[in-house]
Amino acid sequence: MSEKPRKGLDRRDLLVASIATFGAAAALAANGGAANAQNTAAPTTDAASGAPSGTVYTGDVIQGKKVVSALDVNDLEPGKKHLLYFQGVRMPTGQHWYVSVAVARGAKPGKRGVLTSGVHGDEMSSIHTVQTVMNQLDPAEMSGTVMAVTDVSRPALESMQRRWPNSGRGADLIDMNREWPGNENGFTAASRHAGLVFNRLLRPNADFAIDFHTGTTGFEVTAFNIAEMDVPEIKAMAELYPVGQIFDNPTYPNVLHNAFNAAGIPSFCPEIGAARHLDLEMIGLFVEGTMNVLKHHGIVAGPMGRTGKDVTVFVGNSSFPILATEGGIVEHLVKLNDKVEAGQKVAIQRNSFGEVVAEYTSSVAGEMTGKRSDAMSEPGNPLAFILFHKTATEGAETYPE
Ligand SMILES: [Zn+2]
Image (tube, rainbow, N blue to C red; front, side, top):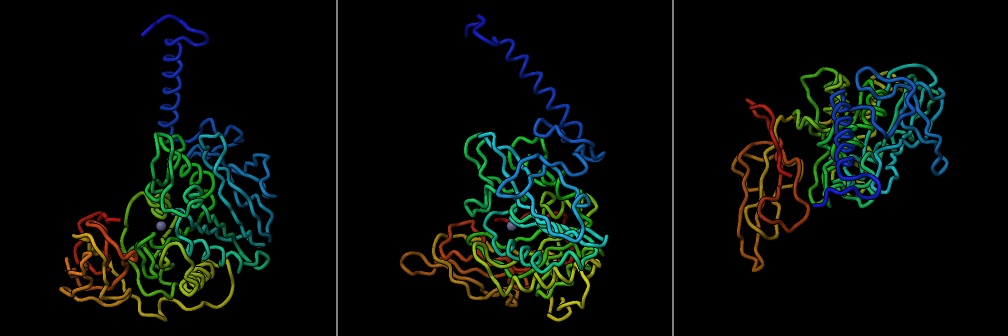
């Protein structure tokens, strides 16, 4: 390769320039992964993350909504609802992904709750639950603030799919709920977006947080909460939902509700049925439970609705996966929420001739909490999850998806 200088930067200058750039990025990463070239307008910074504290308006207005690159809900006028866009990660075109932020700022001071949905792009009932709660709030009557972000993973939502389509190193699909708390200087757009959203929007405005989900495309779940029941503040909130199951398990460290917990903000994760459509009946249960949580924290006044005490709640700390061993059409023999005994046959699978090629039994006694809703399956796909109580847990468990 020629070492002769060409027009502009020669190869050596380019190398030096890129080393300097890399060094700067490494220094920033070592410094807590915060400030970067994306936002230089911050007047003050938060000691913990280096992210700006206080609200930063970019000066942009999109579809009539002001754009912020950092938000402190205490800067917003009390007694009103505010609709804003938060400026998320930059795309290959140089444009940004924006997320929709609704804030109900109470007339009187009080606790600040954060409601999130759309971390996965195919989970419509989670979005509708958050929107319904926000529509029931009257800031003039509230003591405290509720902030909602309904479309955290915008590019995934645009195609109503679970994962974020990343294009930095060729086409890639990234599960946004394995990225938290993110890194503003991370290697993927999903990681950088998570860092910006968490440091500058979610964490600074949360005394408690609820991250709403559903099953995923092709696999539906019951109404349940994922909640660490040995944490009193979390248990108190999870028990306020009139839903039949609680999954008392820490799940993965990099899911959003665990990033909140790691930051000292009590959080849990409701799961609301199937992906892709609205389950209005199930949504109603989670709206009622969430309004109970807001009453529990004194943000909203009024009598409690139905809670876990009004239904039979099955609490399990583990989930037994049944995986397909063959290809073919799956026939479930039990329904969601059904009790299952150890050794009970729960599904069969037939090949194209109609012959039964596999029979699936549960190894545990528990309740059906999830089942494959796509009838075809290849080997390795989860066909069912059975919520059960495990007497001794051996640390973190991973679940096939
Ligand atoms: Zn999800």
